[in-house]
Length: 554
Image 1: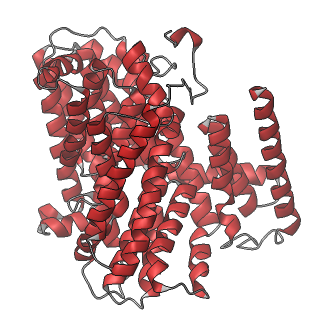
Image 2: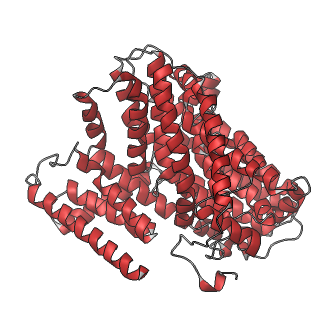
Image 3: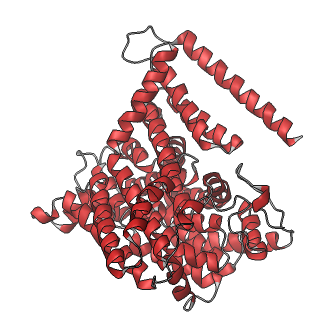
């Protein structure tokens, strides 16, 4: 019955897509014009919406994203099959070139992780850390606190925290889905309230030149009002202290704790990284030292690209840094150090090192593939179809009561980020609009609205099935991607609902006291939810299409 219903839904969606494309075809402007009729309209968000709905229903993200790109390419290109395909290839290949540095960085991290696994230091680190971490509660709180020390960049944070903590969470029977949620919460939501991060630099760079204030100082003023980031971290710690879960996550935690199935029925999707002749000579220090070098080298790489070594100040260098260049510089330095260090310690051989290079790159292939498609759909939405012009047009002839403006901008930021899968792209669209609404004057309400815009961008990014940060978090936790998306979604929506109420209140009283009030509200709501959930038996619900019957433990 469920399979039949699923086929009916998919057929209906396919028909809807065909009808929409048919309408687009019949109404498209003649070939040769620079912009079709959909440019700068609500249709600019149609391709990512198609991809998101297909991903949520089919639980298969690769084809969903590619179909979204094809739909967008058709809406913005010549009315021919070859034109659509050619335009799609151009979009994807151009984004590969633009993000080549990030690809290099991810491959470097994949090779480093592969070397850590082969050397046996991951296992040794887990054994060493278990002597100090005696409970699941202390483990999850410790992982959250650890995120503060790796908040230079969300990619760097997610991949580093996930790989460092994973051996310990496995020992304590924490599901990989729960680990991925923890990692995701300490990446973008943490970076958006950390002054020394690539995110602070990005936000500062999007401040319009008409604003007579320093971009970095404006970013600092948004931190107390960034409700989503603060409430997400509050919820993360509260869940660990209260020791409960809800939604699909509850099923996965039950499977991990009671059945020993930390993967949730998919089995180990990264077996090729775990079956490479692990050494028994690895020590905890062999993992800690490369991670420290990675952190310092990435920090140095970011400062270098910002001109710190040419005389620029520390804050100024961060404001001008290029993460696409700085992170791969740090990754290559850390990779070289780790290889030399492990070879000198004789915990891996030259042959094992050579094997780690392709194995590490192959392990990152799923993440790189999804990232490439995500970049492609973001590009077709923003550049080919003019999504930013549509959002600007929404405010051109509209007026809202000023107290409700933070909530409106929060919802708008969430929607744009959810549809495009990118926080930074949303920053570029909405930050100039936010200041334009206030005539580029920096008022208290303007700062609250700016914080709401940033919070909305992170919220949509946190919820979206095409989010780059979600891809990184699932990769770091080594869990099926759709498992991470679907188990995390109830948590993010829970936080977002309370956050929306908080921004309405913030617009009314315009005071930072709203933040501690909403922190108390979310803790109280979680305590109430725990009482309700405790009365219901656990129902096993798998949310991935990659479930293997042989991997399910009865």
